[in-house]
Length: 284
Length: 150
Image 1 (cartoon, rainbow over the protein chains, first blue to last red):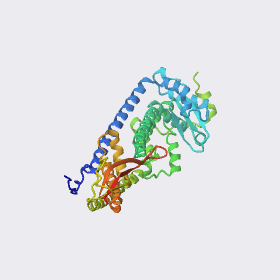
Image 2 (image 1 turned 60 degrees about the vertical axis):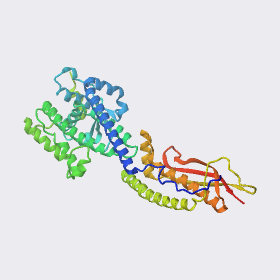
Image 3 (image 1 turned 180 degrees about the vertical axis):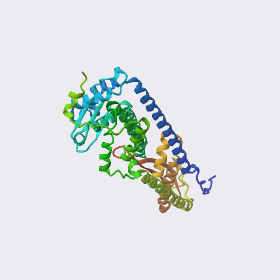
Image 4 (image 1 turned 120 degrees about the horizontal axis):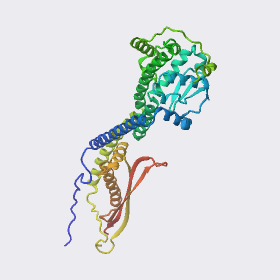
């Protein structure tokens, strides 16, 4: 017998999940967010551990040797080496070293033809000084302070921290670049560390100048100059985005340190004659 | 800036996508009720009721695109596995729409039933020229033989 067809409605929604898609996405986003944060935390701890161990594995001598060998990969082939400045910086460094093992390191000081006044530290005991800075330096004491400041970065191994910091920023931004770019945020956090490094190196520089001259006269000159240049009235926002603390803040720090350790800002400033530095400070 | 664009696209994808989906479902339900009198089966052979019975092929085809919200959700889901619920409604809508289009043509022709229903699917798009993820569109083809008595 032929059956009669009776139309029947198919029940609605049998082929789809009725859970909220927003809930599903939120759960996934939270899960991946936590995983990403854990991965970044792990990367940070790993890099931090490597960084702290690196200092123990590579001493100052070895770092300078590595700098001589591989420094050109990090920009250490810029400008020309200046033997006068190298002799001078070695003299300043020696004045701070009790351990003879770390004296007379073969630092590289390179003069770069830039039209702004500044100095930089690269990993491996390589220092860059701009031509303009040498031209504008009013005294040997001022030059000594700036070079001592750069030696402070070398002494405190700030270059290692910077490399590992950059490595962390690189890994983080690579990991987060999938959908969101927050590289800038990490860079801002990095800037805070860099500003702290500057202050730490200023403290070292003051000690270094005092050790070598018996006073710290001329140490403020460089900041006064750049302070005038930048007007020093930096807004809080500008200073937040800066790698260096404002000059006024650094001058205040120098003053505090001098009061604390009894450094004297009054003393004889020696006129700067760069081409005589080698002869003057050569190790006999 | 990029995160703002991302959130705008995500919200736009969700709200507009949901609205389109709801209205499509409403439309599907109405049309399914209208064409409910035509039975559709997957039988390979049918009982021809006497001489003069006519048969004709009908094809219904549809391409439906996902939205940005579904793309993001499914991308995250595919990293860890599990049901991609984000695309379930897309596949459901496409399948029902394709069958409806086929049935509508059969109905216009005067078919009493459609036999030998087959469904085929394929995805359109999905990857850009340089391999980047693009919105997934699903294509469903429904075809079957319409039967008409003299």
